[in-house]
Image (cartoon, rainbow, N blue to C red; front, side, top):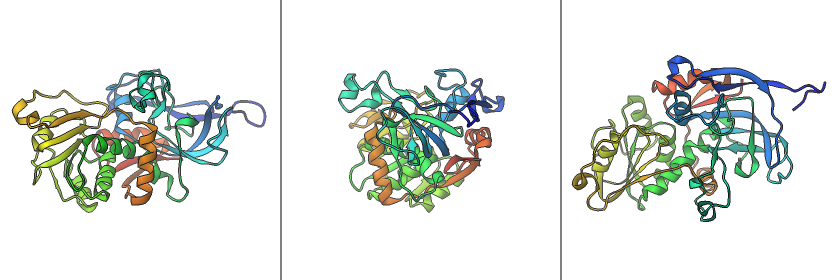
Length: 343
């Protein structure tokens, strides 16, 4: 992208300079040239970007970097500025969203079976490609979502990962109609997923360590809210583990009723302690992982969210405070979801 004088336009973005604990300052603000969109790509002016725990895992090195000095952020809301050759989905000025899944091969057995989230050559926003902790971002138009006018950017951004992955986790948990759902951890994704389950007629019990999060859960309709290691007030038909804490896997499995399913929603999890077969898995209890999402998941969730209109509890940060937002997330100082908004 060039200025009127012919020279490239420079802009500011955050990058993971050296992965490590947030106290070591792994993020750095740098200047770089605004990119031009390639074939099938759109250049987006970022209005807001949600802050995800996956961003924290990347910054701190729990997920190994795919490239040096990558810009995090995969819950991007913005407007199309320019489009590359072959783009038919969007035009200049269209409001779009960019999520975690950034590309797949389209030809492997997983893609052909509608399971593109398992594609061995899948690519991800903010990991393989630069993400939304910046003023401008480039995305493959085929993996972007058309967003409605009306809701504020900061309210839509969390839907693009926290909402979508929560939707997939809920599907993987196989909660029966009117069932009893346990949610372990109550951050960005959990507070949206709980509202989705409630809208479907479920009874929701929240188990999380933060007092503020328990209060928010009750305000948003949970039937109960206790500590992460507490037993829920009744057996669960299904559970979702959002907290990246392996110690909670046997806790959640032990809370399931016969035939119940536990879905683990995180991309990273600390070590799982030994399981007792009789106590944790017998009577057809099931333990399942959740891996990314398909574009069909994204479209399905956004359509459902447009109907039940979840309350998005936003903790707002200007883009120049991205490092503070991640530090607050690491220290459990975020209730709901942190969102970066353009300076």
